[in-house]
Amino acid sequence: MSYYKYDEIKERFQDFISEQSNEWIHENYDDLHHHAFNTDYYIIGYDKAIKWLGDQVFDCINIIKVYEQDNFGQVTTDLTNPEKIVNMYAYIVGEQVVFDWLSLRLKFTKAVND
Image (cartoon, rainbow, N blue to C red):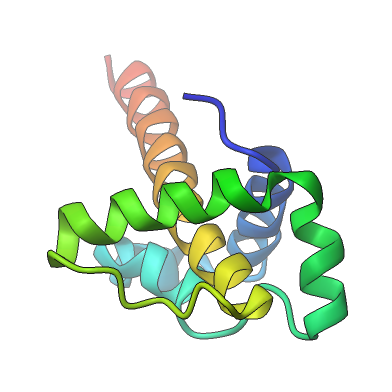
């Protein structure tokens, strides 16, 4: 699946990771997604969020609805609030970004150790 603004969200994660020490990354390995995408807002500002969503707003809403139904059994995000839509969408895509980063790191580590 190709996510809207995946590369932008990935870049934000890479900036976050570059600001952390290797020790911190190791200590927080299982919580990287939480720290990167759940401790601060991705977008602040109603107008900024509307612009960010552009013509993909309904696709982003659909991704949120499916994710929340699958994981929580109900939709809890306020889908009338563009800020909440962007931030939840970035959280969801952030899971894939972190998974991809961890997978690449694991492959690299394995290749170095082989």
